[in-house]
Amino acid sequence: MVSGVSRRLAVAASRNLPTRSTRTSAFVTTSVASPSASSLAPLSLIANADSVINLNQHKIQTTFEARFSTAASTQPDIKLYQYHICPFCNITKSLLGYAKLDYESVEVNPLTKSELKPWSGEYKKVPIAIIDGKQVNGSEQIIENVLNSTQVHKILEGRFSGEDNDTMTMQQFQSDHAQKWIRFASDDLAALLYPNICGTVNDSYDAFGYVKNVESWSALQKISIQSLGALAMYFAASRVKSKRNITDEKEALKNALDTYESEGLQNGKQLYSSGCSSPDLGDLAVFGVLYSVRGLAAHDAAVRLRGGPIQDWYNRMSDQVL
Image 1 (cartoon, rainbow, N blue to C red):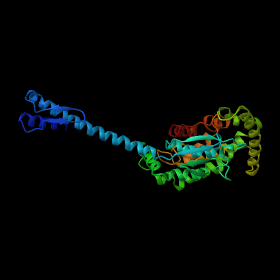
Image 2 (cartoon, rainbow, N blue to C red; image 1 turned 60 degrees about the vertical axis):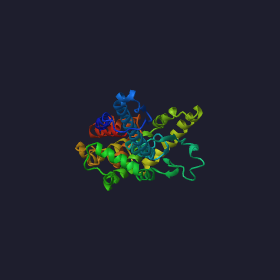
Image 3 (tube, one colour; image 1 turned 90 degrees about the horizontal axis):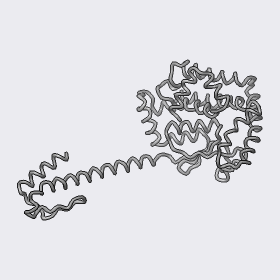
Image 4 (cartoon, rainbow, N blue to C red; image 1 turned 180 degrees about the vertical axis):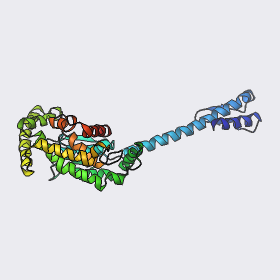
């Protein structure tokens, strides 16, 4: 386009068509009336035309960048209050990670919950999220709120199409089939993890080792949380075992994972329990629960030492989420 316009202007100038005595551009000021400059008129006009076109191209590029920036800024503004080893917090974070959403994470002191006071009202559980200035309580509500975002829909649909997936849709992503495995993750798998990570006082103490990495807490707070928190979780895990009639927590966890491997992953025939080449909310929920105990012996037993389809699936999910 530039060369064509330039040639036409050059021809017009060479035929001595009437011109104004001066021509001013944002980039070039050229005199074309003086006889001494007549030989330079074609070049001057060409430079002037190129400058105008360059200016238009610059405006188009600037407009595109502004629109892109605006689209990025419409992503939800999320601040998540969590416990590091809370399975429900990690279910929520799995979705946020998969959708590539930026968010601020705040670790809550499980003894005082001071990070939630007084603004959270009577609700003192985690996760709690502040999404675009609004308080949203619980993982289910947070996930529902995030998925109601038009921008998140676009991001997820882009992921689906980018993975050469012709079948995954937003409807399938949160279908009844996905809900089945969300309930499995929340009601069964999450409950079984507590006896596995807090079966003894020593195991429970190790589970709270994450407090050492929380910079906002003092040394005294970290000691208190790890000691008292470990004791409280040990007794809580004992109550879970009693309520569910669990005599061997390790065997119970293995049986639950056997169910997911056979019914969800079809013994390795499927990449994900979604049945597609992309995970759905069910996959994200199960992954989030297992990821919540990363670094602990229960995680090794459930993933690395178990091996097979579960480990292969877990590695794929890590690539998708983290």
